Image: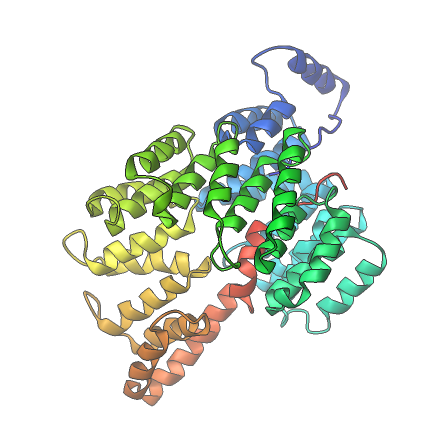
Length: 465
């Protein structure tokens, strides 16, 4: 997350209190909180944000809300929304954050989506350019709510005004439409122009060069990235995202060694990179042995990284690197689940497949649905199998049809075969019920949900605008 700018405080007494805090060790400090957040030290960040938020410090309220919003626990997310709302009374930046939160909120109503649009529009009009991209994503995700809005026309208007965020919105539109690879030259040109103002362009340029297989440009880009990071002009999470691009086998020929080198340099200051190193080794076993992977994960656990628990759970779940142990897998996955939707997929599979000695169908359905609504095609497929196979639960062909259809749309393996077997068995009443349930599930997720959910979750604010 980007460092938060320190704002003036309300009242002379409060200003005095914070000025004293800045000079006294052990007292809450916004800068320390921001720096802790940037390096992944969530405990330190929360302690400082909490103390300053209690004093009415708006930016601290936003930082604390960001922490709560990242937690998958519903109570934490409710606290995040309240913090955003409190800060939004006086802060355009908080209004943008609240709008983005409501737009991405699981199961949000149409009224909440319309409120999100109003908040984002107002924040953008007040000069908060970070509101532009989530506004575009909202239009893309729920076109039925704004049938008269043409996102491309809006983006064209904003680009004509020379707004950097409008160029980023155009790139996101290309991704959503599946035409990104057809516009690599434009993406490169745009991101070369805005590289010093929008840190996401470091990742976009790495993606372009990876797809093109342009090793020379990629090497020069990585050299420049390292230099910019050392001088503090690029946050560590952006270096992390570039490493992930290098390791992505879907973007041309992967370069796991280059990714490993970047992450190894980053990890001492950015604990999340320890987990990235373990995941990289999981995907590319030639990079090291299981002891090295477990050492990375131990460092991630020590730094309170939920993804470390997720990967440990996966290791015990699949038994590829160590003996399968469903009980240990469950323990680690439950620790990861509040903030890691993928943990719900593996938990759902443990309960669905009876790995703990018997099938727990309700637990399986609950966890798999969370993962499916977070964008997991595999979770949709598992739900379809749960309701069609009747293992530990009564067969429900209508429910199986709903999730099988959603899995097939995402080209999940074996989804087409399951649907070809299921459809001939369905009675007219089941088909009618299935169509109603499917419509309801689509509304819960939003139109184009699968194409945009990760964009909404991962979109980063531009820096230094």
